[in-house]
Amino acid sequence: MGPIQIKQILSEASVGSEVVVKGWVRTKRESKNAIFIAINDGSTIHNIQAVAEPGQIAEDTLKLITTGSCLKVTGELVASQGSGQAVEVKLTDVHVYGTADPDEYPLQPKKHSLEFLREIAHLRPRTNTFSAILRLRHALAFAVHKYYNDNGFFYLHTPIITASDAEGAGEMFRVTTLDLDKLPRTEEGKIDFKEDFFGRETNLTVSGQLEGELGAMALSKIYTFGPTFRAENSNTTRHLAEFWMIEPEMAFFELEDNMNLAEDFVKYVIRYALENCADDLNFLQKRLEEEEKQKPQNERSMPLLEKLRFVVDNNFERVTYTEAIDILLKSKPHKEKKFQYNVEWGIDLQSEHERFLVEKHFKKPVILINYPRAIKAFYMKQNEPNPAEPGPTVRAMDVLFPGIGEIIGGSQREEDHDKLVARMHEVGIEPEAIWWYLETRKFGTAPHAGFGLGFERLILFVTGMGNIRDVIPFPRAPKSAEF
Image 1 (cartoon, helix red, strand yellow):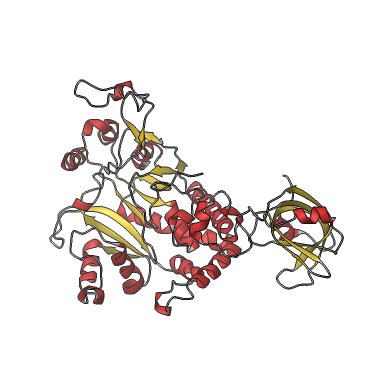
Image 2 (cartoon, helix red, strand yellow):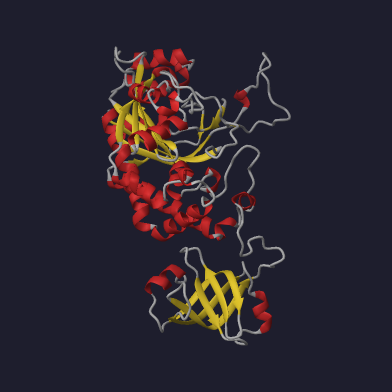
């Protein structure tokens, strides 16, 4: 299937065989005795070196071989005389596919800041860092599909354009074909969406969960994996306006089953990366160590591979929200007023609280359950009153990881029609707006549960990167829709 890639040549080709290498020049170096050209085709973090004798490449052609140019090199695979590689290509022929003027090509062989590379997102996959991230992104996506396929789930394609707001957040991107210069109006002066393409107001989805529940109530176990959109004006290292979500939904699952699945799933995909992406993870670990050299020892991150094994090798601690609040209230950082955010029952835990529980107190990943009803979504199953808890709770769960805090959020869903409708009225959602969702509670309702995992949050964790805009090829954020 096309030319043999560098990854195959380095792992499979035998010394003495003729090889053809096609890729982009990372560096060219000339000495008295030889010309060295490092080539990469994106299949591996490793370059392959082509070596030519002085005068072997015509001067006119040699001038065209610069960082960023694209070549086809033919030659014999030989044992390398230099350090850093086991084999190299003894060049017999070279063809230049495309040139890259060194005065204009922005990726010259020097250190570039991540901020600069975001400005040239069309070229940054050619760097070691971003090619490693994109290969890991692929591997993790493959592992997601493999896990669910092998465990009897069906992949459900939920709509990207929707008339519902699964979260009740209200911060959605509107979809319209109306002429914005001549908007049709009702008699009351409001925009008349009956004139729009769908005949009603529509938006880009914030979640496939509600439609996923419909699938689970027929197929038993489904998962979604697709783009979702939030119109939050958040310029942070943890937020994107467009990101990918993995959302399994399972009939006949209760909270315990949901926790078991979440733990098993996330361990599987991280283990898959450890077993199949060793070269890229080793590179990213060294990159992180280099980046944090100037930090005091106590502020440095856990080594990347150690952090990943920390998740894979530990059973997740399962704790109620009420127990977690009690731990935080008794903690040294709270008593010494070192937490930025206050701690009391009923708060939505902040990342600093979540990380304390994971990294300092339990020293393992944590699943928090039974959150206050008031801070959770309308569709979560309500618990029976518990005298040990200061207020009503729901069967919610959040999975907390070191360095990142919450990585998975989910719950057992409320299957009781009347309780669900009452809760919707409480939060201001009109039942008529999602009549189809409520009908699954009227016709053959069943216990069911599910969760959501932000794919970019997972990649952020696995790669050790610090900014979510660096783990998606073309990030979408406020005032940023380039490429």
